Image 1 (cartoon, rainbow, N blue to C red):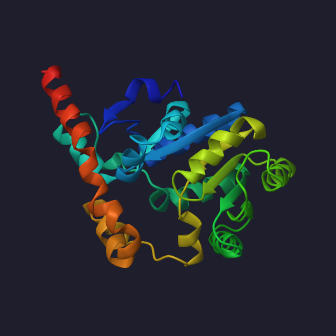
Image 2: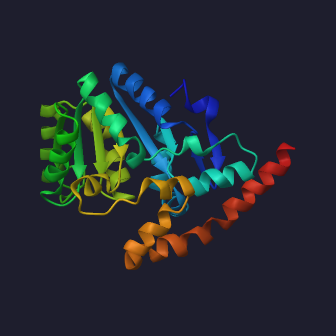
Length: 259
């Protein structure tokens, strides 16, 4: 987006990010919705940066995104160490901005469609969101379908989305499946602001336990998640970051070149 990304975009640990606050991200969302057409508001963390090195389609997805939030306080702290203009206020992740987002969606009358999660989880999450934000316009579809663009499942889903005519499309199917789906369907759907949101609705439904928000402010949310799901997340949090060492060295080189 011209008002944000070109002026602020930074190169950090091998990925391009926009150091925007949650409030700035929501302001950008309003502009995108008002403009019609499509837009993508993505996010980067250490896992996405690890996958970025190995997945050409994911690199293309981030190159096409209008805005890329920083979903990682350790990334921000590393950026500050590298002398970049980024701070704690630029951490922007669903669990931090969800209440402001849903309040804004209700006030603006946005139609929100969520794709992802196990059967019934979406409905449970939607019921919880509607309880907190009475009147929000929300539809859901589970993530258990054939995501090939021309599959019968995908065609039927696009028909459902077209009938609902959403302003916002939240996609929570894990990385990089959710990004692949957005990339393949963005132009076919033709309208809406797309957000990859991972397990957001699992948290809303109570299927997964969300880390206390103070852990995010201290940069140890990853530790809470690791202790909660060690088998699933051990490789992600204990091994993947080491593969970012070459990108970290490139950041160090860039800092010295700026002097």
